[in-house]
Length: 457
Image 1 (spheres, rainbow, N blue to C red):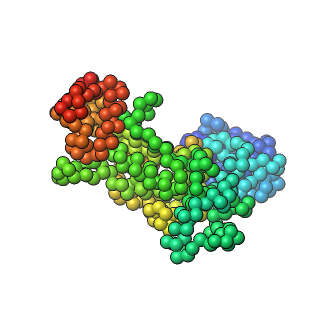
Image 2 (cartoon, rainbow, N blue to C red):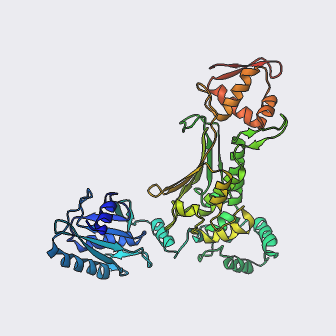
Image 3 (cartoon, rainbow, N blue to C red):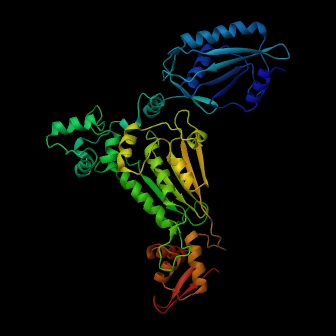
């Protein structure tokens, strides 16, 4: 068996996916053209002709090879706009039949249409039509012809937060915001914050808008903390939504994470604040990446889930273009929102750029898992934390610490608990309220002089 045939067998054994298609034979030129266009509109791929759907090398008769190669040539040159430069290779099988390897390049002139003007895109092992403006814009983004952060919005220039923008101009460019409206519009155009329709573009709204959530309500951060290690349909420890400009979203989300992390006292005294269980820079880097590099063509919020054993930060949009998790770990980057990046890098958020954020997070905390979900169009960072085991229903991270201290001292007060655990009194009160809500804890007697009673020990 030839080395090429061995490689084919290894490859087809993996099955069909977005870059690998099997055809036992081909007769319909339009169907083949749509498959080729769909692959070219994504990352290219290979079509194996003479391979069954269940990965068996059936092969085609030698007298069919000329016909099929001519059909491929016609499909690539006459049934796709713009024409594609494809490569074919004929590989002989032991039974005398042939497998044709049809290699489709990643398109450099996207989007590619079939002869009827339909745009196709690979979606797993299948292909589908692009039917919405949002999908078409995302395809232009893949070809670097158009970016989500330059999308026009319905917010006029009057929706700009002038004090915020003026402060940025003074601090960054040592200049003042013009008084004349014509000069204001010209400045905003030159700074790529206004779209062709004269309104603020998405970058202008998210960076300096008065009320971004009013214009784009889906572009917010939603955070929730659950007891235990799974989503509870009704029970949670803390929950909040963060909207506004990106700086406000970042500050709010970081505050949420801080108040839901437990503190490590170490060798410090009882009155010391303690240090976060996970260095804050880890969350800074991952959250900034989520805000700056998320796919703003996807109408969904960034989500933060805090569990007893992990924190998940879920960003809309999988990694762009040819990026993989392995590549980002090697500091490769692909800028999805260049206007946002250019401003964020000027100090609006703690962003260093150059693909170094993930590396810095891993340098501070190695136990991080990244999931690039192509089908679900999501990118998730899972920061593992040391789980605090608690018996019975007391599964919440903070609840477990509270219960542990109450078991040892039933007449302890909330301020004393806060000092011992190293968190705010508000955090203690919030978790105690959850324990009370589930009939796991009650207070007997007055706040001073009374005692706590555990209902489910």
